[in-house]
Image: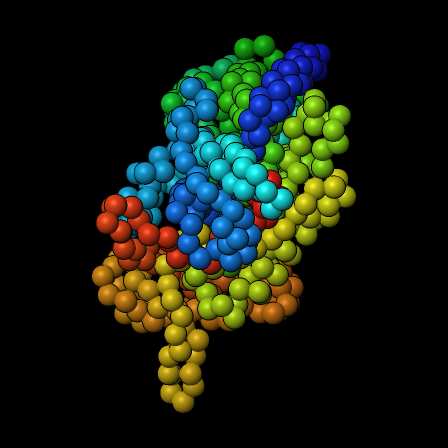
Length: 487
């Protein structure tokens, strides 16, 4: 009953907020763009590059408003929400250009507002306000928790922990759980121990050689100010079917803290930010999953299915738009396309399309515009042909980050030419064990290895502003996400 009442109150708040947003939109057209992705997908780099491209232009032939010269200026405006951190565009750009380092990963929500002055194709002058909302993709995986009981969460979490690829990593947690009696009196020390072991297991699943993606609760791996709070000090328990928690028991404590997590962490994010988005891009590090093997690919597929299930998707009618935000466009983007030769870009898109196949079918039936793209928001490599024996192989050339190993160890200063391998034309070869794909899970060395490269050398002009950043298909992403609003 309480859950139903909370849902009704949230719906009322969302309706009121939508009416306010629509009224403001009449005076100043505004588009709220969500940028998210799972760990190591490059959200911060993409957001920085998108803002820089709008402000500085560059070679963007597919982004028609820019290519046709109809965007006069794009300027930063004051932060739209006083309670949300501002996206540090200037700091991240300096890290990329001056330090030639990749910015730190997204660990919290942030926003930035751009005012885009443009000339519509039919003439005149208009301004579109673009509110960019950057947030960790792991938070999206928490949204299904709103409809789950603690028993549901525990059952699903333990099913994942017992999966073959995860069970060795979950061993210490599962062993402690086997020795735990949920009906025993609540004990803070026991709760903290189980929560720590559960968090360690989730963190181990993110290691490069494993690369699991479906790892709720999302805040356990990026707790921020909530670190050590009771709302993050719980863990799934091995519960008997239809067992109600006895008052004062460990199970009752865990259930209460699970509900607190939903109420104080998940629900405010959904109500205040996620449910107000108009467009969404989901960035995906497909290459890390390829490195790790078929179990990581299958896990990524499940995570992406869960992510899109959380969206309010579909085209707005004039009436529904008045009372409800709907995400009308969703773009799935496989990042780090510059780690491959361009001959593998189409296969990379095909693999991504296969990963989101179930999600695409559901979104398209709801009337949303969906697309997939392989891109590099900041291109760190260039292409070349290298000779190996009598063969000439398509290679990529860049500066690998220090500490990595290929045929030689890399120092982070010298360029190297790397043959990254060819992706199969038929993505089913990666999803069917009969085809023999094993990734780094193969003790013999695996099928694909992708190095990490430093950002490219980018010049600055006399005004000390960075010149346009090199990219792969950032213009295609801009056209899909913004093009119709700049006609």
